[in-house]
Amino acid sequence: MINQILLVLYVIGILFLSLKLKQGTFSGFVISDRNITHPAVIGIAYMAAYFSAASFLGGGGYGLVAGLPWVIWAVFFHVAFACIAFLVAPKIWAASQEYDAKTVPQLLERRYGSQKGKVLLAAIMLLMYTVYLVAIFKGCANLFQGLLGVTYVQGLIIAVIIVALYYVIGGLPAILWISFLQGLIMLVGAVFLYGGLISSGGGADIWTAIPADILNMSGAMVPWQKTFGTAFAISLGLLALPDLLIMLFSAKDKRVVRFAGIYGPISITIYALCIFSLGILAYGAFSQEQLAPYIANPDGLVPFLATSLLPTGFDSIVLLAAISAAMSTMSAIVLVTTTSLTSDILKYFKPETTDDTELRITRMVGVVIIIVSAFFAIDVPQLIVPLVSVSMGVIACCVFVPLFFGLYWKRGTSTGFIASLIASFGSIVLWQLFGNPLIHPVFIGLICGTVAYLGGSLASPTQAAGTDN
Image (cartoon, rainbow, N blue to C red; front, side, top):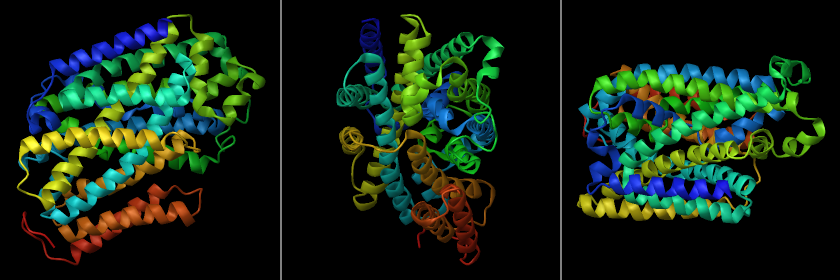
């Protein structure tokens, strides 16, 4: 009953903040009119939007089958890429100001003078973010099912209603402030779970009870090469996912972005270390018989840990933490997906579309995307982590190459931009279908995208902004 009461209070609080921060203009809805002045809000919201229910549930349980390599590589790459992301963040913010960009495709369009590249990237984002949303909805439904006692489909419906309401009402300002609060809840929940597991396992003695094959860096039930690639692919999103980059766009000045670089990496480090360790630590606190059902379905481990380890009331905090992880990510993804569809694709075909019409369509399309993603999440046979790593990896590769080369290499052209998009997307899809499963498709996508970008840029003349090819 406590879980249900807390959930109701949580939803009421979200809706109140959404109404308070409601925006009436398209610019306010998608980038908060670039008026965010609190570094902690951007830094911790960045963490919350990045770590979804997929990390809380899938990442927490994946160590059961992947063993110690998952902890080592996932924590290392997340911390390293978080630090790099915020070192580059002031330059990304300056570029968004220079080009007056409200979306990442718009930023790259104006950097390269390529409307076709903008539309192509927006279409890739629409497709792959929908896949990503399916994985997050799966995690969210599993969470509600495990901690509220509802059916899987009922859990999906609850998630749809909550996300749709505060997305439609508030836009990016609501998403930022609510994600900031959600991030604080996520950190508390992660620390509670980690501490409860260590305590249950007898403190430092928990390590002596973990089987040797789980602590072997060659991998337990998943080869270390696959774990390495999965961790890298997911972590790469910290550098290039559009739903995170728009949070940098919203900062009022470069000082805010610089100081956000303190809060972001620290919160990411704490959360990653606590959550990604749960799977292997569970072996030191529970028997093989108790863990057997979750080895077959690692996504169900975290709700089991919460209800088994924590006293009544404390497990409710974990419930809110996991819900927060899901909601913060879903709302940010829906925002960038719909704004890419309306601002980047619709206005390409109908440039006369007014801001009021664009805002109205953005709200309506967002609800449609939420419903469609939830519908496809009704039957998802894959584990959350592999599904997320591929969908995130495609988006991250497609953005990373033209964004980072565009920031630091003036020779890049629209030909290179478009070539990198086609090469990154095509090579990842083909490798996923026909390539060696021990080599993650994202590595192939990065290599092919970079080669195509450099080759296309060097083979074509530089172009002035506003032109296309």
